[in-house]
Image (tube, rainbow, N blue to C red):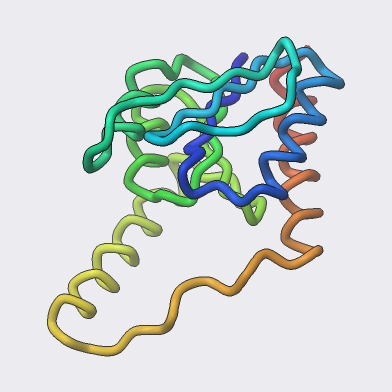
Length: 150
């Protein structure tokens, strides 16, 4: 099992949790971004820098992911592609995307996107990560690792 990170948009506090998990468990964490990343020197953590462009990092993650790999992302279309390929996706707030919930998330995302495109004011995006969100993420990550790394 490997953990891939959609690193361009991943909050630093989430990356820090992933670094500690990788150091503790030896699970490889691979951050994919279209910009250089600063990372700690942990043998099981590495980064891949892809070229600039729309969805280049997302497409690279989908190309690499295998069954039961975990992808950390808030990008719902990326999560859907990962699930279709047999991987799993966890967002930075601790919600595990599954075959059972991803289609509803995609439909809502597309609906909100069409509302914005038609000129309707729709929210201001998600609130900043709270301590509870970070705890939910860490707990969901630990549960996933425990159930897939036996």
